[in-house]
Image 1 (spheres, rainbow, N blue to C red):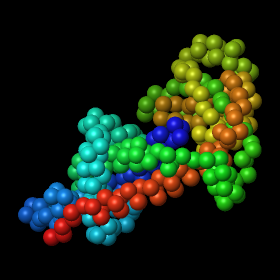
Image 2: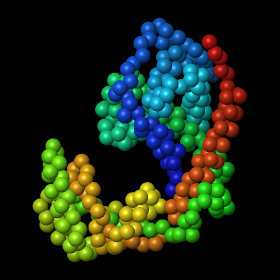
Image 3: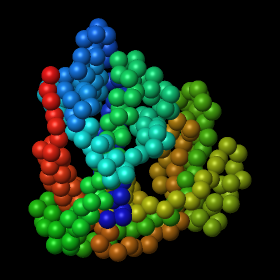
Image 4: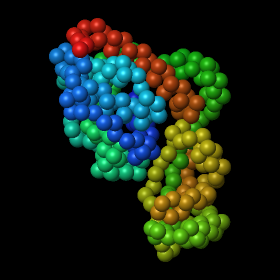
Length: 317
């Protein structure tokens, strides 16, 4: 379970990572201050206003690319109030730093820093605090469900095998590999024309043809002008996309992957070692384990939230 510690939060981050493309083109809907502040519901005495619904609706629309139903948005806001209140009851209260870090991570996935992300949301008519409130509720809820119901979220080998059979996964017995990689970057100054990138790509291909081992090749690369050897990284094949996994598998140890053009220049990787991992770390088993966990989590989450709603005092205006 440890390898899925951030599974639910990462999935939440992924869900909202589509905001960047749309946030710059959605105009803010007009609403008078008096109308926006009208209280539409109380949740255990805490108000939800028309402005809350308007803001969350915009956020949902940016993520899903379709206008959400008003009642669905109101239910989301009610659920978030219940989650945060239940978290306080159990002493689970993420700090502002935690929330801002997660907010910044979302911006980073869209190649924006936190300030740029906030500005983009604001231009789309969304107060950044609307997203931060959603992040807070998600963080609290993950901690609550995982902490209180950890036993029911345990995943057995039979569960994993059943999931693999259902999805017709064929690599259950195949082992995965752990790669030790050294990124090599051929630098290209910002603003350079495409021809400069193509020239550096040819240089990278030339290096690839003569590179035969990390022990001998990396010292040679470090002596080249405008080329950087980055820190060593370790990747398990179960953690990388299938296409990238095929690329790594096809390159012998001691050689270089095909060069790719990036913002900073042309990058390729030296494969310095490749060791077989345990069979239960295969990509198929990893995916099946995550799918089973997600299903168990959703089921337990729904039961927990239903109990909170039944016990809550919810008053509609």
